Image (cartoon, rainbow, N blue to C red; front, side, top):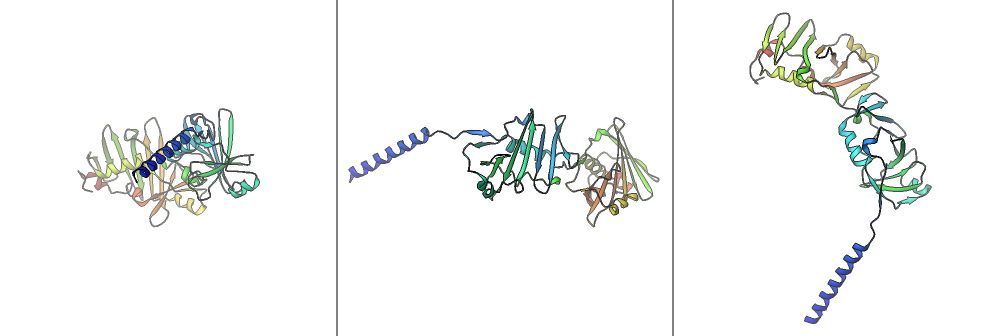
Length: 308
């Protein structure tokens, strides 16, 4: 009985050693970069499918959407694209080859998501598809060899324009703000900054705002980070007509002889439309809470402390 156990142990040890030897001796499959470009050298990225398209270009080190609109790109979208896709590698063994494989993996021109990356004089055109698997499939334009990439491209980096736009519409540090003029109905309130203090003035009030006044803090905070992910491009005439008599107009007097004007009017029961510098090409949908910060009575700014 003891001999049988000893023999069994010896056999198991031999099998384990053989497994390790074979495992270590097996050649690793070579990997190759999909795009073969240093991510820092990439100058433009085009993404398109059968329905939509967009283009991103780097301008002075900053990524911008340049088609179909010109707007700063959202870094929360561009950075993962650079980290997970532009630097991705793939095994050289094809998953399939030929026209039938292209159909089987949904990589026909009209079915796939296209990505064209340019830089250093190179232009690499890749088509991606996803069949519900953890990773995507791809082929190079003009090739019928199908490969797999360990990244989810199709469902993450779509042609949906709002996903790529930076949500930042207005963003100023407090020390950039010299004066804020807020006009609503027949009254204009003026907020003037002198060093670290703010002063309020309208047709009946004129006073220094306490430094710990929460209404003033909220007003400054929204101007430092007025964001939205909802844009209206090429708005209908009836929407633009509303801005002829806006509910609130905010004029910002900034350092370095800069100014900016924001106009707000109702969009629906919970949201407002905002127009920046009288530009009708794009409107921004913001919350009622955002607009409320510009719509406080002068007396609120007299209150000391954080009790409002």
